Length: 100
Image 1 (cartoon, rainbow, N blue to C red):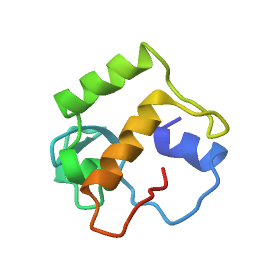
Image 2: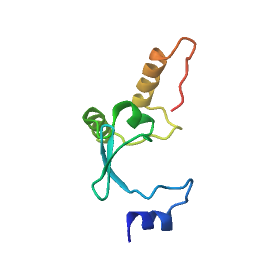
Image 3: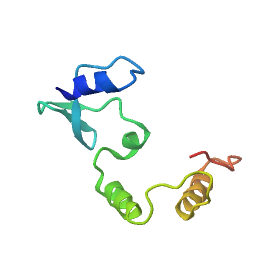
């Protein structure tokens, strides 16, 4: 069974999919399961800013995962607090809150 077949069987389809199975990325390039490369023109917010497999981002994620992977919004959190403070400090004047 292909990855596409598995997704078709077990996932709720939110939108039509292209007949491509992406398996890895580096910077602005992604590769399918046949090894063909593409320029990623559909990347999500994070990837659009820093690229796929960015070493600095991967290290930061790894470092954080060794401490705490997730924290529900019903608790305060040190890392989230620092990120919120940083976001507001670089936001345009008048924007004093952020939603994560």
